[in-house]
Image 1: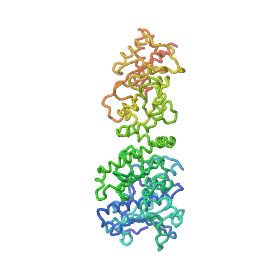
Image 2: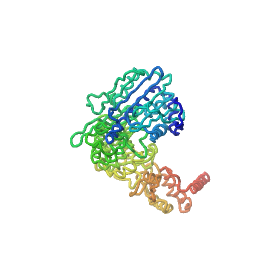
Image 3: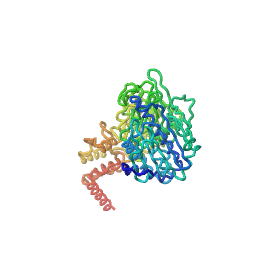
Length: 630
């Protein structure tokens, strides 16, 4: 505990930090060693930032341009320090970095861990990096001493992780010349983290490929010994890199501790020279659905870290983690100018193309592995179907879907087209928010009875891309809930149930009556060839949004006026025949029936009756009539 000074302040953590610290202090996660990887990763980032800033301001390095990280142990006093000679922090930067949480993805992490129970929550702590705060899994107090490069002022931050921290100035001789020192006062059951053998094993296995040399000091007064030379993994030939080395690097750069689902490592030569090392995570990052949809690829130029904010991939590939190291981009320009560079645009195009090509190869060679990637990230990849016209065809070939014919398996559009029936002219789909409900929809009955496969689209993004993707291999996309069904020319399957009755002139007259009774509630009432078992359903007019897309636009406040639906009635249904046979003396009852059929169709479509009070009154009259008849 540091002695208070007149200038020292005690502050409370931001609420989200307090929640996170509570998890760390009370963590039951057994693999607590992740803390060291996190601290070393932060130290490496600080060194990389200094290297970039010193290009334009070499005085920041003070003549010492060699980046280094030193891990110092004091077993006797149960202390461990991780020190870097990187950019360091000012007082305000310290408060911002250590007292608040900037990324909303971390909030998602918190919510998911808190919702998990027992070992499930503990496992999440190990699968996702939580940065500096992971130190509190092994330490009952953490001190941070820092000096911003080019500054005379040094600062100390100290906390026991229980809700408050102290911050104040520190004497120059107690601080690094520049950079940051993180000192952990280890818990009794974490004392082994101050032993040399344990530290060497952890650094070599988990942080051996950070692009900054790492040394260990085994006890106070001992000489530093280098255990990692800071050689960037991506500059090595692929043949010399072991799978576990790729995994360790992925975990370092992604801040996740799962296994990568795919590794993409290549060097581009010719007009533009750059190296890319990219990973598809094995599980969804918590920030995948952040509103800014930003990627997390890091940009280097000649092994100098530039930024992790450059848009190196289109936003529908934001789940990809890794680095791009360019040999051509200039070092002596601002990050903003690099972002606008035509050269970066060419790199972005090349990397995106290679990622999609490698995913396509995986889909062909290992369908099971690709299916796991699609289940995690397909909803994001499909954003490219309406955002990236240039690669739409490639993305359509890559896309996978579940359908009425696939069970739990995934189908490609090529699979679908290859299995199309004679006379079928379109790729049929149905969009909604629940697969089970879609499969039970009356609109599907006529398609099932003819053996026609229908894609079941349950992601909100599906309603957007199907409107902008006109066709695949010459076959247009057609919603089964919109316009004409196009089923008349396709015969029923031999084993399909046949209707007990056929359409009659009386049924035609009854449909006209229903149309007249409903007035402006519908745009039309038609005899249906898409219904085989149900009596009624609703469909959207031929032009405009289909039923699901209209709901999404309405929920987003982007629908100025809704199109009136078409009520389709099954002219071969026994109930419809019975209603059509009612005489003129049943006019009031027929009026009730017309509105009840419409409300039935609305309920089957997932909507409420048009007028709840009127619906209940009509239903009451219908029950009274039934009771009277009995």
